[in-house]
Image 1: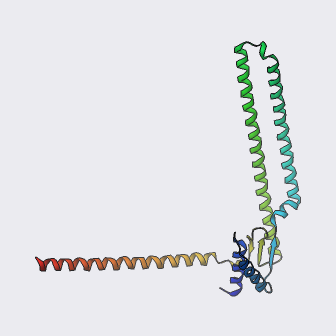
Image 2: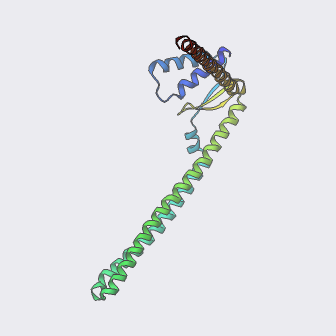
Image 3: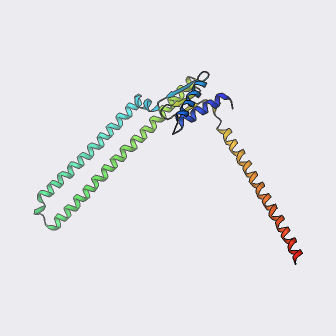
Length: 218
């Protein structure tokens, strides 16, 4: 692997680490300085792209409108419930015991329905936000990759996480790593097999010796 690629991978690994020491940061900075002269590296804040884009603003407005509609519906149901409770309290002393009990049960059921509607509204809003966010994130990353390719960047990193958004295929060596893993695994298997065979041979010789000693002593 060439020196340029090693520097890139070292830099990315350090930037992506969850805990980074001052020494690591210095190493990462040095790595960036070492490769900056012959590489084009871009940095993008995808979260800001999502929020500042026209599509992001439209998504935000859609979520706000949906939230207002759901809140209005819940508020209407709440007002209706409270009105019915007020009417019941005003006339409950005039009701028979059986009629009062039935009305209380109905109001309890209505209250439960209201709580369920509030939970459903909250879930519906959450699902909408997740769906729109996923779509917007995908669009932002797609645009970032397209621009990186257009500008001929060797590497494009996400600013807040250090995640690699785009990398030239010349730096991709996943297949080579997988092959190396397979080779190492096969080597370990072969060594383990040799150890088992050696152990079996020793045990076999031990058994022969035991039999010979037994014949002599009997």
